[in-house]
Image (cartoon, rainbow, N blue to C red; front, side, top):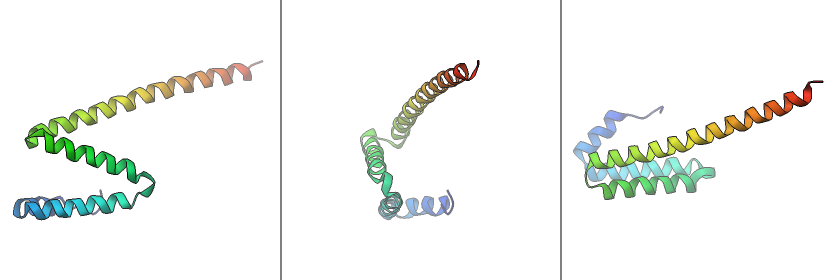
Length: 101
């Protein structure tokens, strides 16, 4: 992530938590606005992340819940990849079957 200064954000969160969340929200809105073709999906994902964090109770519980979300999505991506590989193999067999005399 070019240009991301972790230390700046860390110090802002430590010195001024309210300012951190205002700057964070502004940065997220700006980033989402730069991706208008996926804006509604990104905004929805951010809303889900924010709700998960708010309902979790503690930062540790929030981290665990968010990791669970990521694992779920990775599992779904893995399933889709396996499905795509199966379809690709089927198409390859079909093409090779027709190409041979």
